Length: 338
Image 1: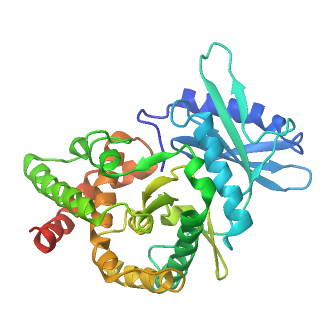
Image 2: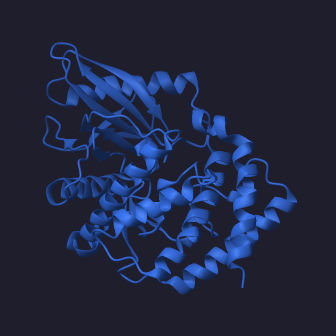
């Protein structure tokens, strides 16, 4: 997921573009290239176009103090393993002229180091949340892809050596949230806070009982939302592994439903995803029954993100997203409170 906790002012856009311009010359084939901002979030992402042959690449300029170099190296290591061992198309990190995947850029009068990574460019368009029938087909395919990623990470010995976040309850809704506190979200009244706290308490209790067995908890993408998928024909490609870490496998489904959890067609998407997932990986009745827990955990997590970030997505969602969460929270409490 994306965007720093302070507004990205004009000075930041200018500075990061200058970093990007410097970074591309650390990679081969970019002497006549231009950079165009695609997205800004925890990182700044640029489209790099070679003006001679029109070939495209993607450059990510990482925000200082979000991920250390070792964490970024771990992310890239997994991406390379997925490319080699899983039939899923992902953007491949490109080596710089010095043979390294991460290039470090220093700016004058700036104490920070800026880590940059270049990736291959993938064709495709993000799924359209307004096209329900297409989404159902795509979610069944996404279920298959997610299952195969989970099968890979559960048996990939290198996973245990990676330095990545642990997306457990404490890091999402607990006392040490990595993004921010949902209690500080936009439009949180005392009444809403009490309701959401009930949800959080139930989620915590149920996850403690659910456990972290190796068949349920491991290395996950953690941000398989629509914006991080590319559709080209019948193919679904997966991008943006920046949030990958160790968490419950079913959290990947909660993340896939980011920002649309309140839509009436979501139960159909869940069923499609489960159908696809079960083609490649077992999913017990107990696990299926726990899916609403992961959806609600992600929903509250996004309320914290919206309240602590300032970008086009958060501006568009704002307080309305909090209000739309109330019916979901009431239903969850009704269905799961013991």
